[in-house]
Image (spheres, one colour):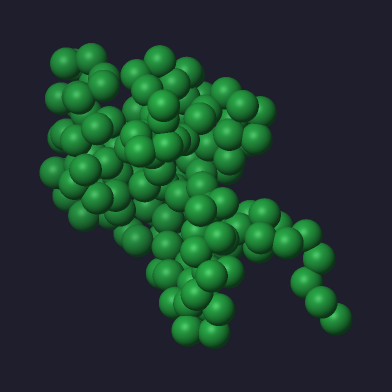
Length: 140
């Protein structure tokens, strides 16, 4: 039975997996169908895509997501993502978030749960057009 929904549906399904599972599935797909893997990657909304949000979009996101949660999830993010978020928040919030980032270790499951909640909010906002996650090269 063929997969229904195309690359958009596949991207949404993959986005529901944790980062390691996403990478594994995409790597397997890359071996079988590199073109399809590229299309799906393009359609996926990932945590790393938050490095492309504007300061105003971040402010809107932080009305729904607690800064402490975002800071905890940032432990799984790249240095680029961490820097982008931290440079777009107030000095006080930056200090508080850095304390969490550099704080004592947390259970991986706790961090993954927080990340999943954040990504649910992000995907809803992207679907509603409230968040636009475009790479700089995509902008005119």
